[in-house]
Amino acid sequence: MRTGSAAETEAVAEELAARLGPGDLLLLAGELGAGKTTFVRGLARGLGSSAAVQSPTFQLVRVYPGRIQLAHLDLYRLESGAELGDLGLDELLEVGVVAVEWGDRLRLEHPRTTRIHFSAPTPSERVISY
Ligand SMILES: Nc1ncnc2c1ncn2[C@@H]1O[C@H](COP(=O)(O)OP(=O)(O)OP(=O)(O)O)[C@@H](O)[C@H]1O
Ligand SMILES: [Mg+2]
Image (cartoon, rainbow, N blue to C red):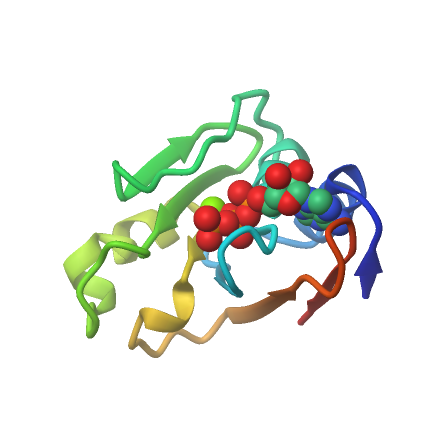
């Protein structure tokens, strides 16, 4: 789908969040500034968190408690070849939803994985596919 503003991208994510539960893994891919963190902001709201979502680039993992817990990771600075267990994702998936920016860098097999791709055809438009 195509969004015309950051608020619209958040709304798309919030709608998706209504269908998510513990064990759902979202791998977000797309260039710098494509809207991955913006999308996670909508996910957090949809999962019942009122936290201010920022890029977790310097922290690797941020956890947002809510109706359903959301763990937010950014692998931009991670060496390639990371595996699920290395990041403690097993434990995070047991209790909630996990969203991973630059998730295409993760090599893993998880049954409830959704890959979401973002591209930016114009400064205000984003194409989001999953
Ligand atoms: N339709 C849109 N959807 C999402 N963001 C948009 C849209 N139009 C403009 N923007 C702007 O694009 C930027 C997206 O930044 P964001 O941090 O979400 O990207 P990112 O993919 O997480 O980047 P990074 O790879 O650096 O983590 C924001 O400044 C946002 O306001
Ligand atoms: Mg980001």
